[in-house]
Image (cartoon, rainbow, N blue to C red):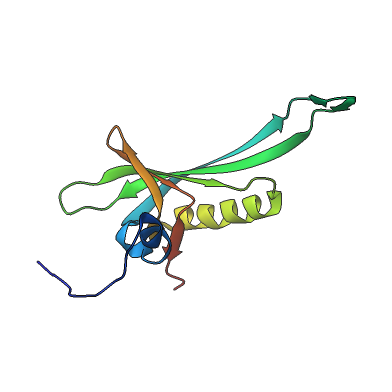
Length: 135
């Protein structure tokens, strides 16, 4: 077992979340298997303030869901990666193209995320960093 004697200053939880992210992130080696792109149309409600009524506003929300497997020495675990692009359609298309290329080339990637959960033995990442080799 490796024990490090690194001195860090933590006075409150926000220090861990901002200054020492490596202590609460999940990092896994993964193999990506499928890509699902969704475009949702969201409409706000009309609001009335005094004499003024605002009309409902429509905008698009772009989401990518990536399926894959996380490598483990005993057994592999299913993973899902969720990436959101609020109203940036061009970034959504470019990101989907890059991920599809990784799936087609069958490259392993490293996934690192501050926000994750495990639900029914599946690991879910939300807006993670995905690192792949360029060679």
